[in-house]
Amino acid sequence: MGYRSDVYIGVAFQSEADLKEVLAVYALDQRVQKLNLLKEWGVMEDNILFCAIEGTKWYAGLDVQGIEHMLTLAEQFHAERGMPVAYRFVRIGEDECDLEIREEHGGDEGQLIEKLWDGMRTTRTVEISL
Image (cartoon, rainbow, N blue to C red; front, top):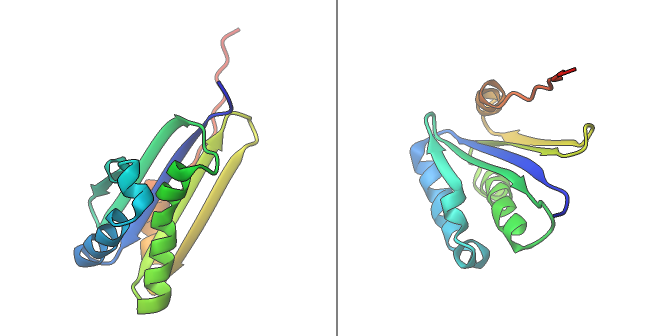
């Protein structure tokens, strides 16, 4: 059994060329290849990579390291090459108060992160069936 979470990650790029370049480097990572993690990512409109994994045990294993490697690459490409990029990471755990959100953006005056805010809203609901 174990504790499970739902994880959603969006990574926004300024151009399709930037997205393809980062995705190509990501595909070379040994963890990504070994666990076939490239299949976890989809390409959305507006040059956004998106990953949604529901009901997962989000522990510090190779799969988690491999998925989160995309965030590391996004930060590296921005820091080393000035590539405009933004990401939004949302993990919702089983416990009512377990919510983790991480965001980074740079080189675009906030336009890319705004795309992710618009497309990745976090809401809470209460269902009552008495």
